Length: 64
Image (cartoon, rainbow, N blue to C red):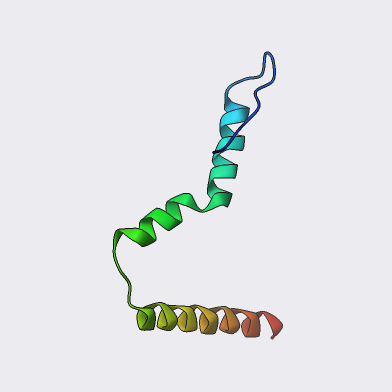
């Protein structure tokens, strides 16, 4: 459960922004989306390898 303290006379936008930031950091929505359908472990590994190679390519391009 997320608890966001709201100060006296504070505009509602600031606590709402803090809530959104905390909610994103917990990864709740990401977890819910992953649980909606089953993904085979081989597909997950393949996606991780593709992402790693993409990031490595970006780093190599940045070095040059």
